Amino acid sequence: MRLPELSGSASRPFRRFSVAASLALGVSLTAAMAVPANAAPTQTAVARTYQMPLGDFSTPVGQAPSRAGADTLIPIGDEALMAIKAGAGNAPASADGVAPASADGGAGPDMLGVSRSCNTNVATGFAPSDIHGAASSSRLVVVTNVDIGIYSTSSCGIVSRVPLKSFFGAFAPPASETQFDPRVIYDRRANRFFVTVESRNSGNTDQFQYIAVSTSSTASGWRLYRFRLSQGSTIFCKRASNSFWDYPNAGSSATRWYITANDFPASGGASGAILSIDKIPSLSGGSITAKCFNNLQFNLAPPMVLDTDPFATFIAPGSGSGSVLTRRDVRSVGTASGSAGSDTQSVKPSFSVAAWTAAAGAPQPNGEKLDTLDGRFQSNSIQSRGFLWNVHTVNSGGRAAIRWYRLFKTSTTSTVSNTFTFLSDVSTGHLFNPSIATGSGLAGAPALITASRTTATAVSGRAAHLIFQGLNNTSSSWVYSTAGTSSSEFTGCNTQSRGACRWGDYSSTSMDPTDSAAAWSFNQLVNGTSQFNWFTRGSRGVVNLLYGPAAQN
Image (tube, rainbow, N blue to C red; front, side, top):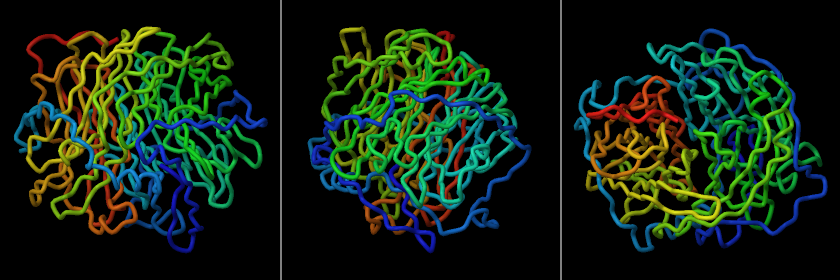
């Protein structure tokens, strides 16, 4: 999400980082500049600990503030995205795919395909929400700007909710530091949650990448780590101390945690980076090493590797438009503390896909647009048995649609097995902000997609949280359920500098460890007229099959 832009007395001038013209044209970016001499390829971190307190210690909008300053809007490459949006929707539209039908007609709280809905984190003066969530058998962990919340999967009740700065308080972050861009995943193999958060400082160029690993599936205790991306003149993985580390995404494998990010320099083209992090020692609180690979493609998505493949595949669709998914493989070597330092990455053949362009935004019934970003993968890929799945927002005849991919890879080939574009079955509908999950690499296993939808229809067309249910190798027989509809609409969006109100910037879909045909879906909804008036929801979607689903692996 790019450097936060503050308003009010706490604000400081926002420096816009220019991005190469190739970004505006939608080309996947790389950078030619060399890694600075003071940028080490690895860094080691030592664990701190945190115990979640019982109760709610966050400060929702409308309650007594726990922080000074005005509402905070966190831009995400505004200059580049505005250039992209100027041409969005003008290129040839992608072919319409199958439009899944509603499983429930959008009526009633007990709709077919949704077995439970929990209201989760709420606005605390930041936009967008950056909603991300994951589920164990008993707990939901939900992260937003700028809180982490733990909820019961059975009752939806709050177990604990605290600000991110309290969560990572063992590192004594200064008052001038903001922690944002959170992500969380659940690793079924280890039965642990993995949280990532980045920071920025309003007084200097210091940035840190924070991570946390739960000590159990209940998420009550945590081991915390921090990597110094830039502190003074010392840098790690960033291209310069004054470049900006942005939009970190989280993944995992049998032996590694992964983080990808975009790196915006003070001038010149933006690029991507990967952190490959020791996982096994983090499970017991040992010291861990992160290996950096940078000067890579922009908008790389990390995988959640469900099997034991030592090669994790990272893919990038480009930005604004594209016709290939660029591929990089990271090979993990060893499991002991420091083993990640020996990991390697290699360029692999790209996946050729049907040409796409970015959607130009998603109008609410009042005509005010919600941001649909630049066509990036907004959440992690799923990797198993040589296959990968991911989903992004594309333009289809001037409407936002979601396109999902099932890809197959070997060490020397990259093949598109299936690709489907889902257009809303409502003629004025827009689908966007998607994420996908499947519990198995076996063909025909259940798959679920989280997405947002707006339509031109008053009231019922307000931003909705949808859950699509189907099988991971076909577009046939997919349906969707409405997990929630906003009670209000954002206003004043079209006069924003980006021509839209911030939305997301992502959703997440997390398979239920107790049921391979079910997943928890996390998304944002609206309860006021300002883009700072949001709340989030975690809903359990179920693929209703006539036969037993494939085992998860």
